[in-house]
Length: 152
Image: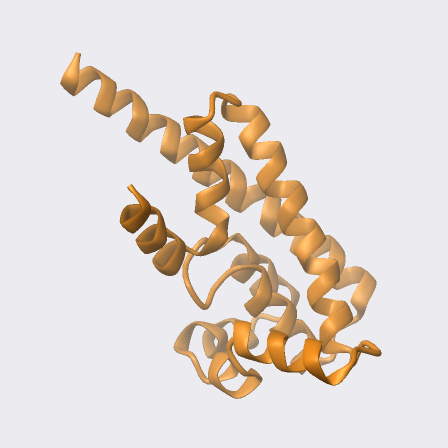
């Protein structure tokens, strides 16, 4: 089970793990959705804070740089290059994607690189998270119902 969760975490980012673990622990569909949206929105503010050069000491900065991909590696991916020409709509779409190198970190990084207005970016990133979480939860629920009907 741990190998499966690690594989899901690597390929689908944290965005998909929270609803799956929420379902497994019996939280229910909409509680897991709410938790996923809230955590993603908290991540949005944290990423903006770190990208703007938060007054962190050197050890924390090194730890963060090892955890996340560099600006160059993210900004060169095909997905980010395509979304760059769409501006605010691009960061909203990127925030809605639950894939590795997609999602909130890439959307915030793209917003930071493009020097978009922060308040407007918050709105589009939040809407992207809400849409992406809804699609994910509805899709996982449909897969769960299909699995139950096959094995029942």
